[in-house]
Image 1 (cartoon, one colour):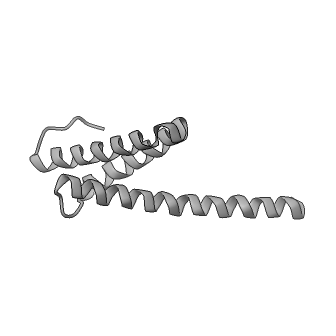
Image 2 (image 1 turned 90 degrees about the horizontal axis):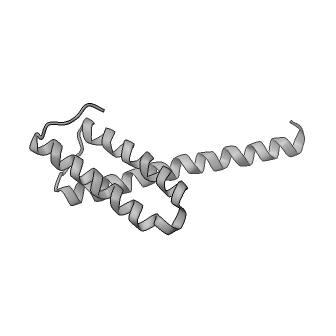
Length: 97
């Protein structure tokens, strides 16, 4: 790649690592707020899968809508996770993913 290409690659790699770390923090924040809102104390495997799915959906929606829909997207993600947790806790029948 050459020196300039190597520096650019190092920058891209560094940004990708920051993005992954930030995504992880974002998922934890969504999890904590959603658990608090749903009244659930600790997540089970199903809840963790829902949180992962909703985190990715929220990130995708943020990328598509930008800052104009930031608050709405976050509120929807939190509400969706809390609803899924409540349904799981109540034993409501679920559709297959």
